[in-house]
Length: 335
Image 1: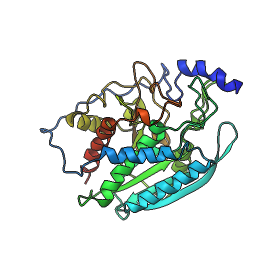
Image 2: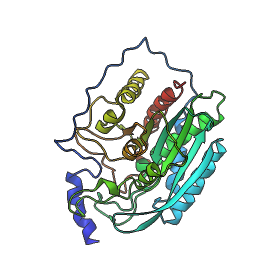
Image 3: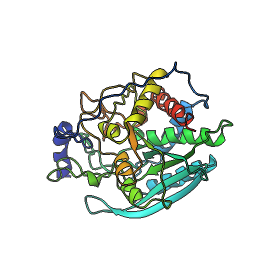
Image 4: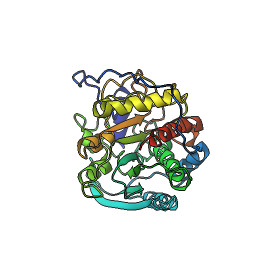
């Protein structure tokens, strides 16, 4: 399509997600965490092989765009696996309208551990994939596989769910894991005048205004987005610092002490990133942070971002381990 070809140049010079305005509120200074000598908490052993297989299985379905048969098939797989881990699962179905007028039948997949405990934390990722490769130089009108952008965050959370549900060592906190739909069906850069952040994160926008449980709340939320690529870096995202600076400090501190400082870098993004943590924080009132692959100096999400090269070839088990083990450290310290 001619309009998609015209997008390519603009997509290279401006990020699809990040809003980098000079007038954006300055993030709070990075706070130093003062504590006793660090001792890792007792926790299950994270398996990067297992997380990798969960990612590969999603990719095998093909692109997961709402309305496609592969999308419906993957939803059944994710639901079945989470139930097999011993989690209570409910599906929030609705229809949303995309930027191009398409009506999207979406499914937010919500899983709960220790549902009777009112003290809860929320972990989430998006499971859909980009409906077009608008940053690629070929086949721009075709949807992408989204091994990193979508499947990686889900894969890590599935491995966490398996360990929490089936390992003998149980956390005491209540936990909810949500796989949000239609995060990546946002307006392509340059298609319309200006950028509208509301065209992204359609699943989490809907959930945050229509909670799956009356008066639902959680201490905090953590979003995993694009967490599986080789040599990934996760800067401190400016919006996350505004929403929950203390949690950002804790997560990055744990990661460094566990030996993953090369992934969880201390650089702060220049502006906030439009992602699922925004509606969760602003609409649902759950102060959430975003662990997301982003190069703050290149101001880019990676050479594979919104391209067909976002496939299993870029997924790295070392990166999955860094994120998964750090997340377990956070979870198993909760009381």
